[in-house]
Each structure stands twice: as structure tokens, then as C-alpha cells.
Image (cartoon, rainbow, N blue to C red):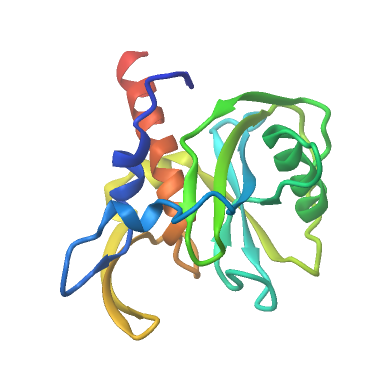
Length: 203
């Protein structure tokens, strides 16, 4: 799977963006109003030691930002860390990721998350050596591993009307767990899935 200058980008992300029922989704909603946002990153961990490629997600505890949602491990950049260093540190803190056998293959398109004022860069990594993950109970209620085929299969892609912050939205999500995979994580995930589909078509 190739990550380079020809990423599907924001078009892929916006396909999984919630849309107001009484209007259209405005791409400006995913642009910062100024330059004082926080730079963050998430690790997109692809388990490659199994027979089928799987993606690691976390169910965030209810007490933290975006609690109760499925997410990639990640968080805010600290000091002079690089985006990659942030993603790896956060994954170590949240799921006990061991760095041995972790192969970074590139970055996806950064996504601005307005509710937390974070510019989030997804860092994609293949986990080539088998390891056991341990959730940090302060941040993670559950670690799940999803076969990538479940995200490619159209029957797992659902749309429903939800009320978000008092406004009705049409929300696309993946029905792959008791908790839906939606929002910013789904937007980032969709870019990866489109790249994976391109890989399947050319191999």
C-alpha cells in the first residue's frame, strides 16, 4: 500500500463527515480559523503478522475528550517531538505498543477537528512482530482489532439521522462494533480504505 503525494485527501475524508439534515456540509468546518490550533497525531496501526490485515482501534473512556468513541491511539504533540514521535509515544501510553517491528510507511492527510481545536495527522504503521496490547485504564476502555475487509465491505457502511449538539445530522458510520465508527476517526479511516482499494485493484 503506497502513501505518497497522490493521497485521496479531503475528498475521501468528507465522504464520512456528518452532514446537517437542513443544509450541506461546509468544507470550511474542517479548516482552523487561525494558527493557534494544537498539532496532534494518531497512529493507524495495521497488524500484519496475522493471515489478514487488521486495524487497531481504541474505545475511549467516558471521562476524556471524545469519550465513548472509537479512535486511533494518539494525542497532542509535546515539546519538539515530530508528528511520528508523538503518534508512537501516545500509542505506547494508550495500548502499550512495543516499538520492535513497527514499520512507519507514511502519513495521511491532516484533519482539523474543530471541537478540540486540533490539527490531527494520521501516521500509518505496519506492526510486523506479534505483541500483546494492554489498555491504559485512564484513557482506554477497550482495544479492538478490525479486519480491513470489514471496512471495505459495503454492507458494514451505514447512514442514520442523529442529533448532535442539538442539530439533526445525517451521519455515515461503519457498523463493525457495538459502538459505531464515525466522526473524525471514520473520516481519516476512509482515506486509508480508499488507498487500500486502489492497492487491491492494481495488485
